[in-house]
Amino acid sequence: MNEQPETVFHSASALGAQVDTLFLALLGITGTAALAVAATVVAFTIRYRAGSKVNRNDPPVRAPWVEVSWTVLPLLIFMGVFAWSSAVFSQFYRAPSNAVRIHVLAKQWMWKLEHANGKREIDELHVPLGVPIELTMTSEDAIHSFYIPAFRVKQDVLPARYTSLWFTATRVGRFNLFCAEFCGTDHSRMHGAVVVMPPAQFAQWLASGPIEPDLVTRGARIYRDYGCSGCHEPKSTVHAPGLIDLYGSVVHLSDGATAVADDNYLRDSILLPKKQVPAGFEPTMPSFQGQLDEDDLAALLAYLRSMPGATR
Ligand code: CUA
Image (cartoon, rainbow, N blue to C red):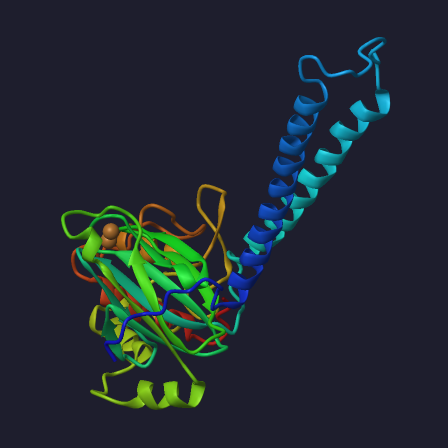
C-alpha cells in the first residue's frame, strides 16, 4: 500500500462537499462583482473617451436608488454569506455522538495513531467509508497541525492538551495527510496518508495483525495499578469524587465555577489535580505528571468514557 495519494480537486468528505459549494459560491459572487466593475470601467472608458460625441451636460447630482441599492444589496449578500459559512463552520466543531474515536499523538516528526481496539499505526490512518470519525489529538513536543486537504479539515495539535477533529469519508482511496505547522527540521517530511476502506474490509484490517489489549482494558489496568481505584471506587473510605457518570457531566468547582468533564478537564485533573478542585472535596490528590505517558492517558480516558452513564 505505498502508491501515491490521490490529488483531490473535489472533496472526499461530507463536510468537505459543503465547503466546496460555499467556496464556489463565493468565487461566483466575487467574480461576478469584479467582472461587472471591470466591464463598467471599460464601457465608460470607451463611451467618454476624449473627442467622443456624447452629452456631458447636466450630469445627475443625486441618484438615491442607485445609492440605496449598492449599499443594501451587498449588505444582504454579505450577511447571507456570513450566515451560511457560520452554519458550515459550526458543524466542524460538533462531532456526532456516534463518531468512532481514534487517538492521535504527534511527535517530531511522525503521526502515531491508535484505534479503540489497541491497533496502532504510524503515518497511516485507516478509516471506514461513511462512518463519522473523531480524532482526539495531542503532541509530545512542538505544535503540529493535522491536515487532510481532501477532507477540507485542519486542526492544530498542541502539547499538554487535547484538540479534536472529525470527518466522514465519502470516497474510498488514499489521501494525503500533512503536518501544516512548522515544527522543526523535518517538518516538511512529516506527512502520511489516510486510507479510506469499505466498512467490511476495514473491519478485517482492524482485526488483523498483533492483537494488543484494547484501550479500555489497558485503562482499567492503569486505574488499578496506579491506585486510582483506592480512592475513587464508590466503596472507598477516602472522600474522593466518584467516576461513574463523570465523563461529559457538569462539575461544580470549589471556586464556584463549573466545568464540563471532557478530555481536557480529566487530563488536567490527573496531571494538575489542584487546578480545578470539585466543590466539597479537599485538594489531596497527588499529581501523576511524569508517571503517566500519553498512551497511558489515552487509555485512562477511554476507560472513563466507557463507564456507565458517561455522556460524550
Ligand atoms: Cu509536525 Cu510540522
